[in-house]
Amino acid sequence: MKKTLNVAMIGGGFMGKAHSNAWLRVNEFFDAPFKVNLKVIVGDRTRQEDFARNWGYDEVSYDWREVVARDDIDIVNIGTPTYLHAPMAIEAAKHGKHVVCEKPCGMNYAECEAMAKAAEEAGVVHYLNHNYRRVPAVAYAKQLIEEGKLGTIYHWRGTYLQDWIMDPEFPKTWHLTEAKAGGGVLFDLGSHAVDLARFLIGEPKSVVSVHETFIKERPLPGANAATFSKGESSGQAEMAPVDVDDCAFMTLEFENGAVGSIDVSRFACGRKNFNDFEVYGSKGALKFNFERMSELQYFDFTLPLAEQGYRTILCTENVHPYQFAWWPCGHPIGYEHTFVNAFYDFLCAVDKGADIYPNFRDGANIIRVLDASKLSNKLGRKVQIEEI
Ligand SMILES: NC(=O)c1ccc[n+]([C@@H]2O[C@H](COP(=O)([O-])OP(=O)(O)OC[C@H]3O[C@@H](n4cnc5c(N)ncnc54)[C@H](O)[C@@H]3O)[C@@H](O)[C@H]2O)c1
Image (cartoon, rainbow, N blue to C red; front, side, top):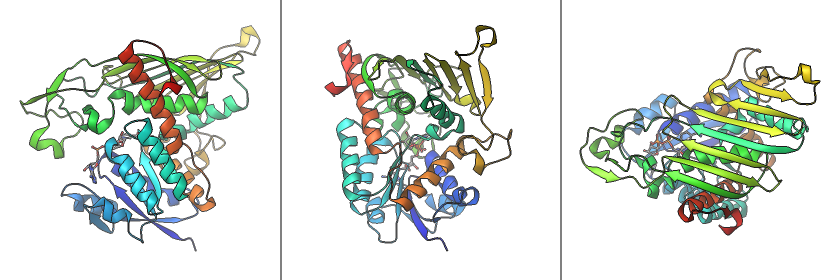
């Protein structure tokens, strides 16, 4: 009989749904070492009862400090805006809870270091949800690189583009407020892009960056902030300055000698969730785009010249990472499955008392690169990551 772990989910927004769904699915598709019970949903406003009913939570709370201290909570799952990640994660770790936290890790490198230290000292399992690592095609790319199929890595090209804030009437939500988000698209999508670069090819050493904010002021969300969702107009007249970046372009040197680029924007019309990378090595190359998430393009430079060419691998075979748990080959999985894959790995880590990656230490190293990018943009020069 498997033991049941109780989850406290903090934040009932987009990620609240994605995480609740994943906890509900993980034991249906994987032979996870623990059963999971959705014990309490914690919100900061009324209407959480509907959320609790929909996803099957036993209880509703509006006081996260009280909840993370409870003896009957095993896992604290943070899905709130970025400025709340560190206080919540540190408090949860102090109470001996295993922690799942959404990206970006925290507001700056020092804060993320404090999160990592608190979790390490408490000896709890800490997982930072850069879920794109657990797309089967991305995990397979990692496998190919580790097998040496690409040889020496020369180049990384990471691009993550969206277009949901291009309307100047889109209000200044928490995503567009530095004190709540830590940064604009740099922190939101740039954190994912840096995570993939670190995961697949290694640690950045230096960065040169240009950031820009195209819409300098936006309407405040006002009274309808609580119900606002992406794509709606605020309808409010009162304007406020925007203090975060709308795009960030970085050129990076890596510790292993590779040179690459990462560009992220929420002003790329037509790009919805265009999380894309290319890796070029001495023996081959790979290309991935999340908008076609089951496919991985592979170029084998060791083949005779006449036989060379990019080929598309459909990563839906049960030999591809995580696919054994899902559908027969050729029946693709989606965005939500990456969360289930991650939570299966998380439960296995709790069972074994092992580390899971990325964790808060990775999160700190990611934010360090983003802080360096901010500094480079401000000073107009190359910044060594160790300057941060
Ligand atoms: N991994 C991914 O693919 C992905 C996608 C989107 C967002 N995110 C990250 O997830 C986090 C949340 O983003 P979101 O899109 O779900 O935001 P959201 O605005 O949809 O939801 C945030 C939720 O936090 C709640 N909240 C705010 N303050 C609170 C408090 N003090 N106590 C309890 N609840 C509180 C709000 O009521 C809201 O329900 C962010 O860090 C974001 O970067 C990750």
